Length: 161
Length: 76
Image (cartoon, rainbow over all chains, first blue to last red; front, side):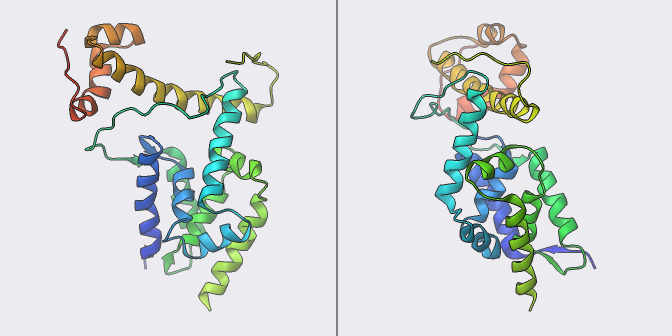
C-alpha cells in the first residue's frame, strides 16, 4: 500500500508555501518547512522542537542570524531593519526548491513501513541535512541536531502506541 | 558598511554558506532594484543592459509582478 501524507503533514507543506511567500522567497526551502512545523499543524514535530526551546520566534531569529552571519563572511552587512520589500506576483505558484525536495524524500524514507508520513517524519527529513541553512541555524541557536533527531524518533514511536 | 576581506582559505562550510546567502541577497536586491527603476521610468532594454541579461529574461522574470503592482511600464 502506498504511503500517504497525514493531514497535518499536508498542512505543513501548504503552510511552508506561505512561509516562503512571507520571507520573499520564490521557492520552498527546507527552512520554510521547518518554520511551518512550529505552527498549528506541527503536532509531535512542534512539541519536539519546543522541548529544545525552539519556538517560531526563536527559529526565525536563528534563520535571520544565519543569513547575516553568512553574508558577513563575504563582507556584506544588511541594514538593521532588513531589506525593502519588492512587489510580488499574486499568481506566482511557489514550488519546492532542491532543499525542500530532499526533505520530502528523506521523510518518505523515514516513514517506510508506516501507513502515513507524519509531521515527525518531515522533521526527520529536515534534520537529515548534513549542510546548509538549517543545520547552521540550529547550531547558531545552540540546538544539537542529533539529539533533536533522537527525540523526534522517540516521539514518533510514542505516537504509534 | 564594514568591509571584510574574503579569505580564500575560509572553512568550506562557511564559504559555501556565504555563496548561498549572497545568491539569496542578490535575488532580493534584483527584485527591489528592478521595481524602483521601472517606477522611475526606465525601460526594459535599459534595465536588461544594466543587469547584463537579455530583455526577454528580465521581462519574463519581472513583468507580471510589476503589472500586478500597478507599475506603469514603458515599452522602450
